[in-house]
Image 1 (cartoon, one colour):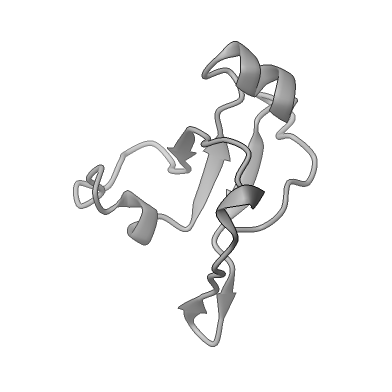
Image 2: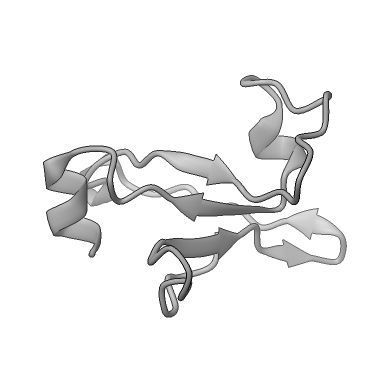
Length: 80
């Protein structure tokens, strides 16, 4: 995913997008000690959620998300 830039002005949440190269998603294997916490992602969509977006498929089908920094107190203090 892309690194955080500026938060979106209308809600203050950070938008992230899938990184692509030659039409394929970029992915990395990282050491488990580099993981600080999980995050709650909202899929970024317009007015209607596509019906094929299920909880098991949305990470593959959606290309951009917003990071929910309001999911808990620790996330708010860490992300914001």
